[in-house]
Length: 57
Image (cartoon, rainbow, N blue to C red; front, side, top):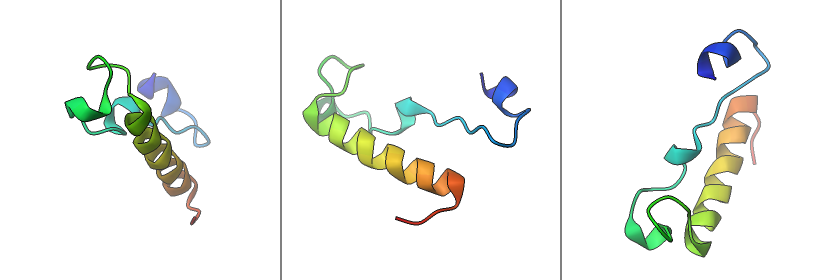
């Protein structure tokens, strides 16, 4: 997917697995984030989108 996205200057890949620290308190089952993990995921995703687009919060 990254290789295909690199061909387009208007496409950015954000790796979701890197958005939540891999600590047990953030996950239900080591894969799916719990409520706290989802909150962190959402915040970090918004920051990553803003960074990718060069915009500020």
